Image (cartoon, rainbow, N blue to C red; front, top):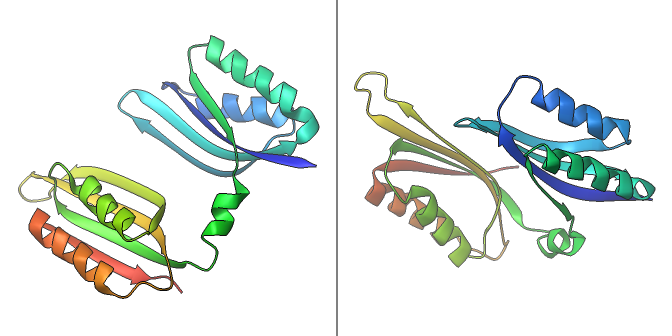
Length: 175
């Protein structure tokens, strides 16, 4: 029998960190199924969905304790199949947001999605200098799942929020 666990690890960025963490996991038969990793400032963040033989859970606890003792912030959570099943049948959408950076863009979009019962599956944001002016540009890409019963008003409302915040919001249904 296999267990699925979500692991998060954050710590000072350094060359070889990903190799070291994944080697330790591989040594105890942990398979990385899905991952996200990024350097944010001087901190490296690792988010993993892993699976492993249930009999190896004590060894995983030992690996995580060793990483903690080396100064990393580590958290583990067993997956919740009930939450996944609760959104079975929802429709997937891609949301792209691009425009002038401003405080609150993520919050306003997330607030409208939550109000409509739409779940955020992934969300990535970044800022960069505009090519000509150097002004800070914001970009966001999100994959969401929405109940089949929703009408198109939520998409129009996101576009209206974008208009008020000086960003373009594009919502596309994923086939």
